[in-house]
Length: 254
Ligand code: PEP
Image 1 (tube, protein in one colour):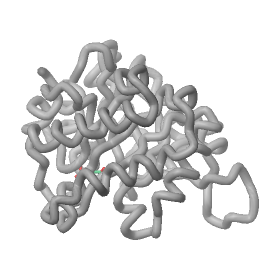
Image 2: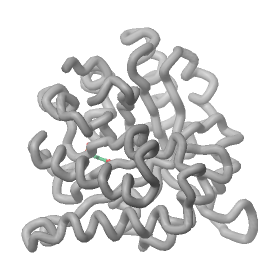
Image 3: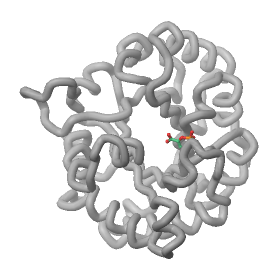
Image 4: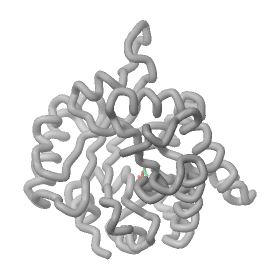
């Protein structure tokens, strides 16, 4: 982490938790951690719990986010939810291009670009996910893949629209597998992402953009990951589902 960027610990609950379970979790985690001054906590529950917990995330430093959005503002798109609707629910963030959406639901660099732009247009901060598959890493193509995903997501955006945008590096081989990138492996990719962002948007955005690491982050590895200079937080699946483990992540120590 770098003291100039406020660390962000984000919970991606995926398709877990009923409304009652979500409310109980946010009440308990806030009670146990208290307000966060020097770090930010993001909870991204399923759509069905957004309304129920938006008023309950009342402590300083806690924010609400969604896991996906559509790029159109409204229309005949059965089953979809727009970025403006998420804003209306109290969201500050939306995750875009998670690898599960890319792999299971046909998300492409083009739809990630459309969603990123729609989120910014609606006043949300997108958390844009990038990351290579295992075969791509083994072939030595990780940087090329991630570079292409970044160019795809941000094509046509000017630096003036990048304020608040978050990037998450999530190697696909580390998500939900228990295999974590080593801090050194993650730092190498984060530094690459930051330099690519610098060449697209310039020095100011390079310095301010927060880049999260995601992929089997847990209490036992969070401190070492957060000690790396270009790792500004974590996007967490499994370990965000229990109050005890998520509390340890929020309270990381470097
Ligand atoms: C994720 O879903 O973004 C993720 C990183 O999951 P996990 O922490 O379970 O690997």
